[in-house]
Amino acid sequence: MKRIFNSDLVIVLAGEAGQGIQSIESTMALLLKRNGYYVFSASEFMSRVRGGSNSTELRISSKPVASYSDRIDILIPLHNGSIKHLKKRITPDTIVIGDASKIEYDGIRDIQFNKIALEAGNVLYSNTVAAGVICGLLNLDPKVCESFIYQLFASKSPEIGEKNADALRRGYSAGSQFTDLEIIIEHNESVKNDILLSGAESVALGALAGGCNYVCGYPMSPSTSVLEKMAFYSNKFDIIVEQVEDEVGVVNMALGAWYAGARALVTTSGGGFALMCEGISLCGMIESPLIIHLAQRPGPATGLPTRTEQGDLNLALYAGHGDFPRIILAPGTLDDGYMLTKAAFELSDKYQVPVFILTDQYFVDSRYNTAPFTVTRLPENHIVETDDAYKRFALTETGISPRGIPGYGSGVVCADSDEHDESGHITEDLELRVKMVDKRMKKEAAIHDAVIEPKLIGKVSCSTLVICWGSTFHIVNDAVRSLDNDDIGVLHYSWIFPLPKSTASYLGNASKVIVVENNGSAQFAKLIQRETGYVVTNTILKYDGLPFTVEEIAQKIRSMI
Image (cartoon, rainbow, N blue to C red; front, side):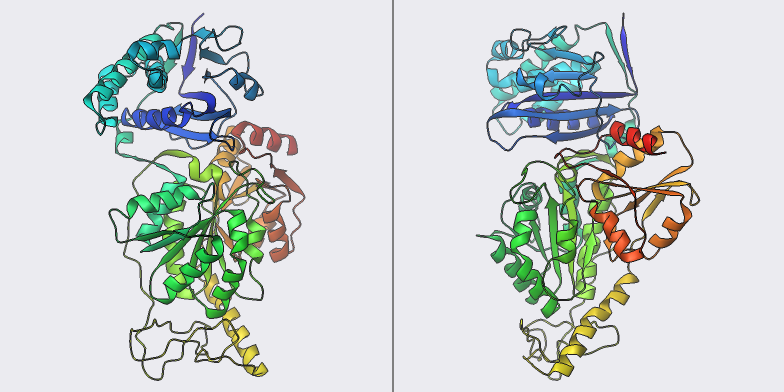
């Protein structure tokens, strides 16, 4: 009997670290996009250089797709441990294609990847063979596939390009043999004009659009991908990228860069961010702009360093001793990653407060195709030219003082970690201390005017409201849409703090509110309670290191209503 896959196909590649799973995924994602298919990919991997069990999901669709599915239509395991690793996702409907001499699975469809690769010249070409198998299964134009492979290896020798093309052809032939499988996925020519990006790339491009010219960090998964992207862009743009000796040095170097007039970005993860707390408090005292990209991963301590979680909201919310305002953003889409990071530089520069951009491993490592971003205008510079009467911390109605930098004008730009007077000199005048605290906190009112409202999908008057934030947007939205119930709405927050004042009205309109979070303590639900008094009693939480899937969210919402 012929198996037909219509409109949406989930292929999962699995193997040990070092077997090139990521190479196959990145190659196929770009190739599929060039062939006009909507594509989404996401990876999960263990914290090791060799061995273990890793997998990557490649989802191909006739329509835009950007969410993680639990379903596996076709599994290509490259080592025997893959079956055990993915057993909860494998069903009788899953088609397993692999080397029957190495993979123990009843009903496996035999393709000996290593043998075919050796026939092409080297076992290293097994990745290209696997890519060819997928091309054959999808019946892609073989000439287009070969041309792509030649382009991919253009920087190598002609011999390597030819051998990889031969491996692709052999894999294509092997994948085409399964005539009982029919995959019907329409392609769209307009997709070829899309860009294919990861979340990390969207953040990096947003930083460029925001005028970022200085980046520093200490390598820490999963934030390092943004540091790497910015290092790559530094070859084309006027950007200084520094790998610093530790995170204490990172935050202080970034503050020094802003003090000198640069537009600096810090990229880190939870453990690194924890070391920056003193510097963040210094930022609050000297009223410096500061952008910190915080790519979350499961804690506490080292936790699961290569997994995903939304567990650092409280860390960003309460980091630093003393009272000072801050802004917390959390992109849910690639467009958010670009626009929010760009906006972060404007917000931080204008209000002279730290801005935290919360992503996570799932967001930064996932990729899909999207329309090209639009740069509407160049970033505004809020630096003023100083004069002899200049006061860095002048008391103003809004709490925002004119920010000068050394050497631009005749004024003295003084900054100190102690409490200070309007000129920046140390003071223990307690009445002035109160004025300075009040001045800094006044900014919160001004910041509220810039708040980005949450995105509502569905009716304002829906009886059930599902609230999510950050990276869970596409998963939650697709799950709710799969329920086909117009009385369920989705409210997604990308501006986390200060919490939009409209939140109370949204809560009041719904009979039931469900908050979805990738953490174990419902941190955003508790922020809602703190700010509005509304107690959220229905939560869907996950904290095993894996992202939510569309299916599990749909099932849990269904059980609650």
